[in-house]
Length: 305
Image (cartoon, rainbow, N blue to C red; front, top):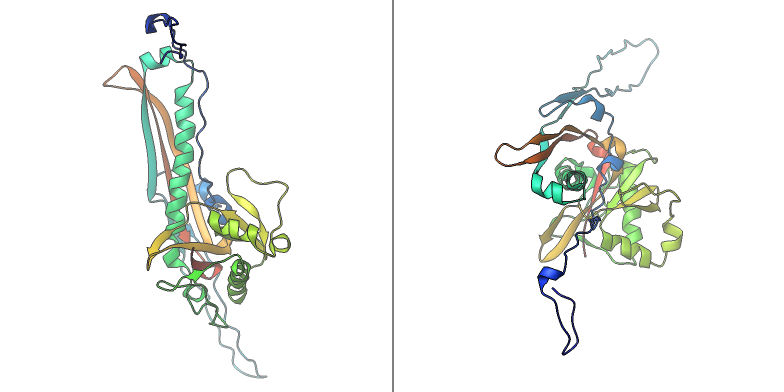
């Protein structure tokens, strides 16, 4: 619309006021993605396309028996079935840029669209994985009676989620650590994924300074917050959330990287001429798969606001 003019002043018609198209785009904001940070991604380089299958060998467990002098030894043949990582999911994008728009614009729309689609695919995949692994978490590491040894650590359950407050949030995080301790999970490379409102509670808690340690080098776009009780803490908006008994409930995920295997690869990225219009199509296909390979290395804390 024309610029406002004072009363009695002249105003030109639109024919005399040129339109200017900016050469800059407003950047989009994206949710942080955490899958690559909390999982074993060793197999990503071994996939080539949709439908691939990666066979993962696991270490068998040997039986330790009592020994008496002169006894006949029992010999076992250690074996453990292989795990299969199926690359059976995929997401794509496809968009057409009209030749007329390309000529009239001094902005490289193709590059902008590709960057935007890449980030949004990461977010979609992240949300799928963070929800999809929940049923595979060890029963000993979730629920109101969690703990392989104690069996009395309350991690929240359907119908009775834990209510977090700024006074108890650190206690429950420490409990999640105890659950993993009882499962013999290694202390290094542990992670905890929380929503933003839980991060805010931690920052408001009385023990925030003693519990939350920052990091001078924060990895880009993975939501890394700091360290609490051996957990590297990540903030994510992609965690599973449901309405339970009228409350907004979230599944906070804790564990060790060896618990989850995740593999993804952008297998196709191409630009082709459109058949039905004068323009070019840019499209991409990203394939991926995930598997819980050590259920006892993952834990779930089911909470409500």
